[in-house]
Structures are given as structure tokens and as C-alpha cells.
Image (tube, rainbow, N blue to C red; front, side, top):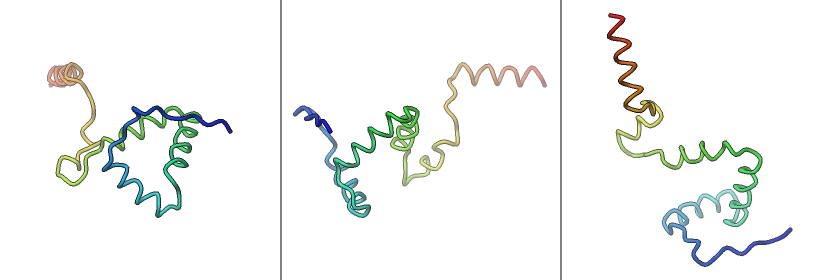
Length: 90
């Protein structure tokens, strides 16, 4: 297996790494192994990035966090068209 050295400006959030490290220890994995597994998963299924991004950006611990994934992601123009079409039906 070929190895690649990450450049010195590869910066990670210390708080996130510390939290992830606790989870990884409980799963008996190390950080390097997890990053390699992550890259393998991306290569096999590139659409997994959307799922991961959605999960990473999901808010927790507040009322608005309960609404994540429930409200939708329509833009203003689409909502306005939907509203106009509904009012014309009435």
C-alpha cells in the first residue's frame, strides 16, 4: 500500500477531533483507519458525501434542531409559485 503524507496546513478542529477520538476508542479504531475507511466509502459511493454533510450540519440540542430535515429546502421562488398556484385553485 502506498502512503501519502498530508501537508502541514491540513488543519482540523481540535474539539471535533477530541470528541471523535472518544467514539473511535469505543469502536477500537484509530484516526488513520477511520479516514482511510471514509475515503474508501467515498470512492465506492460518492453520493455518501451528501448524507455525511447533511448529518454533520444537523443541529442538535435546541428546538430548531428538531426541525432539521422536516421543513425542506425549497427556495423562495419555488415557494412563491406553489403559493400562487394554490390560491388560483381556490
